[in-house]
Length: 571
Image 1 (cartoon, rainbow, N blue to C red):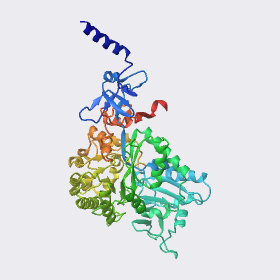
Image 2 (image 1 turned 90 degrees about the horizontal axis):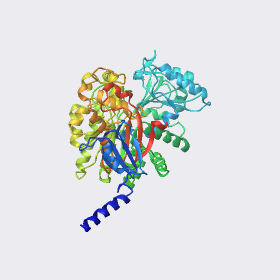
Image 3 (image 1 turned 30 degrees about the vertical axis):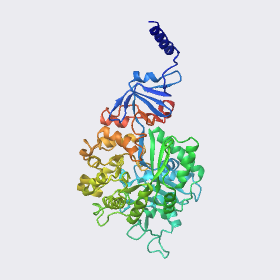
Image 4 (image 1 turned 90 degrees about the vertical axis):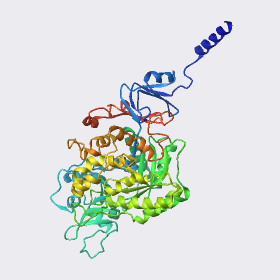
């Protein structure tokens, strides 16, 4: 009896002296609607975090067991938490520079574009370059009276910018619009001119019936002018990156796949990481437009950040065709609205073969841009051949970026070959109303934006925006994934409704599938114990609210590694 009393006394004494739980949390998030993207535990109320990792997931009452006086308690007040969203294909510096230049993404007419450029010209010094991005002629409410090959001409642009060269990138990044001053500097002259006129392989200088350049440059022809624009200063680059990171945080993006950059961007991101300025995890693809860059990295090998997971470089981006808007996507058959034209091969397919065969044994992933069905088919052929030469490569995770328009015979090959379809659902909302003119109804139905069919083959489909082609905001892309409607809510029932994602599939495409596409599914992408405490918090339950209300949802909070990098309440 005496021994039992001593045992009880010791237990009570230990309990009384205990200051709190044995494994206290740094932060807890309670009273939320938590969608975990964990099949074993799909929904919860609360999460505990320690050292930037998830310590526990459960009910608010269960998570209270991890709270001490030093624990930060964040009451979600019924708001919705998901794993941190992963932007699987966009352009980091483009997002930042877009905020420093003329933003033409929302102009509705050619006249509005001219007004914005005129305003910039009024503030510019003579000779200064005027640059901008985001115009898209197919999204204008009306076209100007004078057009050539479906595009505007430079006359009005030249009239308001007599003293400044102008370069305006198309929203797709696959065409540009320039004024007379810029063309003079580049040596782009009328065909009848005594001076030699500039042309470029893999692109086109659009001309009218008399041979006069219209100011529209398609695909690689844009480099005739873009190469003349003064290089960015280090200070301006830092400003652009700062603005881009701020935008990502505000839009709930915790990880970002940068779709093709050079060593300068990698070095800048590394600098920000060293200084503790990164608020999003970066997965940077090496641009295939710089062969010397690839050679240097072949010697070095992949840079995989297995410590804090903030900067990894292990993939190569190849740009293999153009975009659908400027008739640049490479097709197997003629464009329906441009007979005799099938788009552009913007990179020799031999390069895809060479890079793929070199990448596999070195551990690099290959990410090939392909929008048209011909480009997708050609790349799948070369991926398949390269993998056959390297049968030991069991986890290559090669990707096709966009994979928008596929031949039906090629759709099963994604699943068979293990090729990831890195798609952007928002392109359906923006492009589908006019894409049917480019491709015709049969090609649209059989192979355009076929998310559900691809997933049924076993392929992984990721999501994103291709920003700054589209705004980096994930909510419109999530809406497009589940509705297949325009952002105006049309048509009723959505385009090709059988290809809609479920909300669970759409969320997974923006989280766990995005993590898989960068070899990080064991570290992030779902809310599970031991994974990164990366969260996105919304003011509405995007998994339950009526479909058309999704576009009204807003990001309330963004958390990366347990650190709140954006809070709407603090704005």
